[in-house]
Image (cartoon, rainbow, N blue to C red):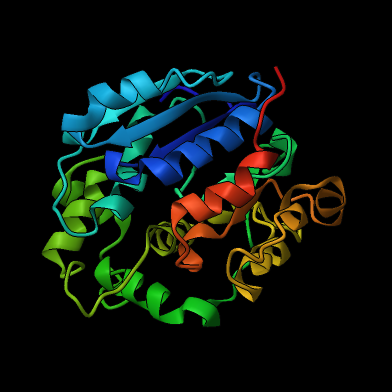
Length: 272
């Protein structure tokens, strides 16, 4: 297989027209802080097929990197857990060694620099103890039959079901991964497979800091709008205290998008 570049990153986002409010805030943060186009190859946008045309118009939102819109019909998966599996299946469209998924409750909070998320060809990550999400990890391993059936290795799955990430889809379907008792996320699914194949440390590195500003995220939880102090996430002193490039807060507060925008937009405006 061809060697993919490690000196660039691909951003991936999944959204719908119904979630345009949050998505446009994410885009505004990218427009403000994604200033070095040499480090990000493109933004890959995955949307429902009947909305692809509309998003191709939105995609010209003055970003410094190309935007590629892909319809969901490109991915033959089952309805349940669609969003999580799409984050894995989208790898077939990525032409860099690494890609980073951007949820709609994520905002870029400072000038993006590749060395904040990559180090010597490996991706940094937020350290998470197994105990924090042990049920998710256990369910991922169970869904893929990587513990209950030790012989069901990835090589065995490939021989049974084919190549690429469809392996995950078929394995989850056949072995009960879509049952309600198996609650997993795309992150734990990926981590279980990577660790099982002894590949995780080849591609990832723990630098003691992650890509999300954990202390900053707590700002949004202490009080409800309109009492937020958004400067604690975006101003120079906040970035000096925690240089992590992203903050996650919207989905954890239950606050309407228009109220979020009122507090955040002043920090996302681009000077003419």
